[in-house]
Length: 140
Length: 148
Image 1 (cartoon, rainbow over the protein chains, first blue to last red):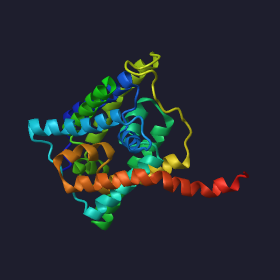
Image 2: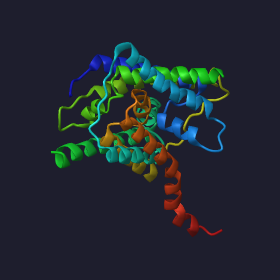
Image 3: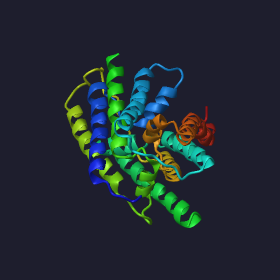
Image 4: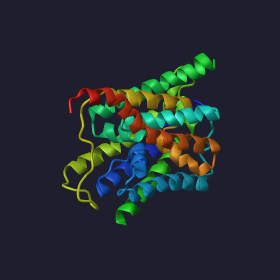
């Protein structure tokens, strides 16, 4: 852990950027995962199918890479109640804050949206503070 | 149908990017958030190259009247910074820090078939569903104060 992987990070980021560019220029949509998922859950629906295709693509993309290369390995250090709490906070927070790492952090910053710049700074700050508390104060 | 296929293609590219960059691994993300530990700045480079390409795409989009396969661009228009934006983002960051998962990697990690991913995603969907109710409740005093 702690291994800096600059080349795969840049390459993976480029693929994510291409995905956002494709969804924007072809479909006119923002590639924000939480917004796409929230919209897919809306009832009555009318704009659901492309969202489901995008979400299926996420799984297929990661699965294809894993099938081809056997990686990356994933690991967890969070208990089941911890994961459920984190999932709830992530769902509530991204809905109330209107975006997540992809919607605000990638697309919003690329649009130079002041809202997204503030949102991204905020969730990175509380994310770092949370890891500091869980790893170095409670866990340490 | 065409729009579904392009959405699928974009999703596949996105999922590939999360795998290549290892952002699908919660421990890799936590290593970025752990500034007091063995800090791994990789996530910054993932965001940097994704933002650089998206930035060009938004410039190209600004020159067009509509996207290739739709009548109009569906883009956010708000520019105001309010308590909901900051509060929601702060809460999301706490969840992100606890698990090392944000929405896209959590969803794409479902392909690993791990209970951990499934538990997070199920709770995240519940959170997305209840959030509008929580906001409505919080706003109720304001609404009832207006004459009507």
